[in-house]
Length: 225
Length: 225
DNA sequence: GTCAAAGCAATTGTATACAATAATACAGGC
DNA sequence: GCCTGTATTATTGTATACAATTGCTTTGAC
Image (tube, rainbow over all chains, first blue to last red; front, side, top):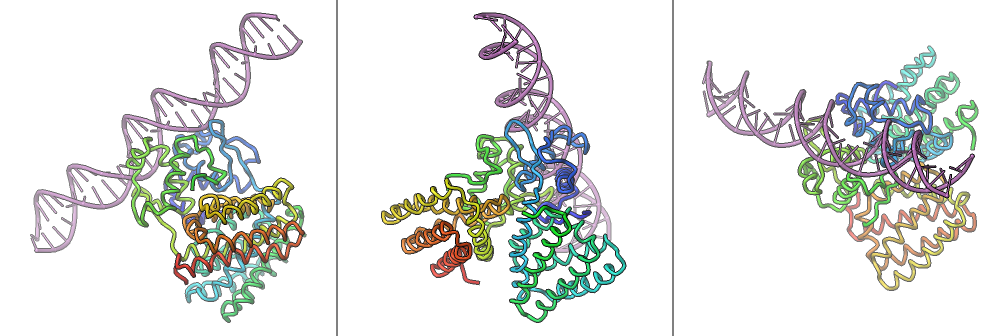
């Protein structure tokens, strides 16, 4: 996990920012089960801050759908169901396709260079079985794609979803077979963008997500349907 | 505008909820120009509350991308560019298509009945030129579609975008010609869902958005490209 | 024993007090 | 005159105090 990729909330040096990132991570990583009640004072004491920054973080988490606040009552963890994960992958399959299509026209030289380097490096680390690096490179490849789309809205949305399924993605990429296959798919997307072939880029990015989705199901990481 | 349709924040009876809804509306309706600095005390005094609920509302608005908070400095209105509106319509065209497809399998009887009533009523009000009712019915039709998709994630996302382009949608539907055409398209989507024809439902919902998009451009409501 | 109502404890909602930070203005040296 | 450093002020960041609400417990009538 390490880094917080949400731009709008990247003041990790304020107490509120730290509380927000921390709680977000804990929920996404499954530290809190669904339905658990989060108490402002308890969270505050755990992190060594007062209720004020905790409350502000709560409001943000509520907006993200990670907790549900019942007025005058409490904050409850919502959690991510298997259905949510499945839905997100289907949504991503369509939106990443769109991102790849738009990237054909909007990718900068720097972005293209970083993407090529990314694919090259990923091959190396996959052969060596360096799981942490593979995960980081996969992260970065997708973020690059989002940024290259040239759409603030689309980029923001896809980064959100990307974070949302963080836990399951980690498990998925740990499989050597999927890692290798994923790299090949990244390379194909890169080539399509380089060749300015928008239809191919969209189709390949779409399929890339569908394949990741199928892989999760085949490996029993989430229940089908 | 009237109603706040965001589920996660619907405690309009708390001060924070009121501040949030009010600021959101004001920004979306263009009361504050892009780049304007919002001061916590000033906003608080205007609405008769202290800084605490204002700050919590600010954090939420930041997460929605409506303002940008620079730590220890201030909160600045971000605003919605023409490009943002265009991007959202393209994204919506794809996601509403997906919602319509999923609705084929997940719509409940109650939802179907309300949708039929909605289409029926919309015809009446369009003939009479009742703009406010037309707007509300259009709102509700799309919300129904989102809810009928059976996907919390997709519903949440589309409701967000729907709110986001509120201002421009109001202008669009005010045109009698577009209002009538929009109704026909709603009816066609409804029929496709009723007939369990997923491909048609998706295609029609997709086209519905594209048509709305084209209409905005043709009427000069936003700049093309 | 059961039900209802009142009171109590715990928690959230809001206001305010205090701390830290950043921008501005001003004074002094060159 | 201009640059630099410092003091001042305005604003945000955080902690705490107080108010309001909820849920539970206890008590009492039947």
